[in-house]
Amino acid sequence: MPSLRDLGESEVLERLKAERVAMTGVSLGPGDDAAVLEPASGMELVATTDAFVEGVHYLPTWSAPLAIGARLAAANLSDLAAMAARPRWALLSIGARADSSVESLVELQRGVQSALGRHGAGVVGGNLTAVTGGEWFSLTLLGDVAKGQAWRRSGARPGDRIAVTGFPGRAAAGLALARRLGTRERAADWEALLQAWLAPEPRLDLALELATRRGVVRAAIDLSDGLAGDLAKVCAASGVGARLSADGWTADPELDRAAATLGVDVTTIRLSPSDDYELLLAVDPAQTTESQAIAAARGIPLAFIGEFTPRAGSVTIEDRSGVERPSDERGYDPFAPRSA
Image (cartoon, rainbow, N blue to C red; front, side, top):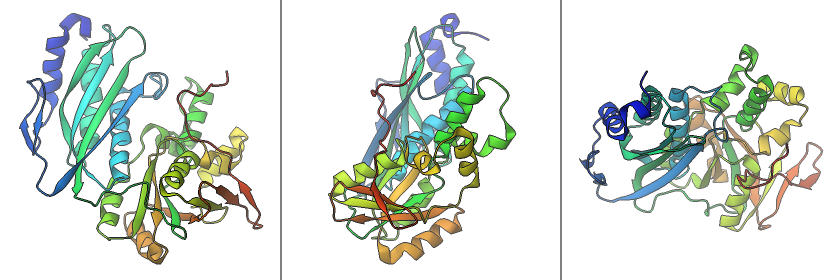
């Protein structure tokens, strides 16, 4: 199997370009210094980017290149879901070691392309460079949304319900279990949690459907840094506070079992840093039934776990006895010191 050193940059780029599919709205694709794109009339362009670094955002012993690519795409798709934007075009940049196989890069791009293709988007360009340390992959995703209709973090109002899709905390539990399992064979009984970490499913289709109901969702953010940290960002942008309730969460026996195994409180896992790529929404309290029905029709849990309050910046958790305590959980910070 040839390496990048064997073939050289030009040949590797040609192989990557040969794998890409034609996209609408592309006046000029790969081959020149830049792609030329045509946004539709009356639409605004939405842009996001994410980078995965070896050993930080993915563990090579646990993820094949195809899965890494799909997960990188999911991270970007989730950002567009939080803006209620439809994905269109992507730029893929790769920092690879010279001894890496060309096929591994082709497979990674296939993972990206497959995940994007399910939502009508595709890779239209990018960059390839050499590294000597950890490899990295960066995806920039462009989408569009009707002018003035993008969801933002700044629209939450006191009284709005706090809704979350799926099962927040599962990805964090899956990663913790993977680190505990090491290189041993994956445990089948933890498959649901491992898949939440390895193969998250962005909630893009649900977001686009909810967005057709004007006023149902007033603010949104994707849960890529942990629920507590991302909720705090919505509160800061909207000038509100939040009260979370111990009741209301979607029952999750898998997470309960993992919490017991890891010796951690389940609420701590739900709120702590976790790459869940779920959505946190500020929902009009008059529209909770409609939004829940829309999610249920797609087979997606949508739990109402609290409400936004007038106390700007204050985030509290109310236990089942009605006692409130300040939330001291924080979101993911790549520059924070780590314990050994």
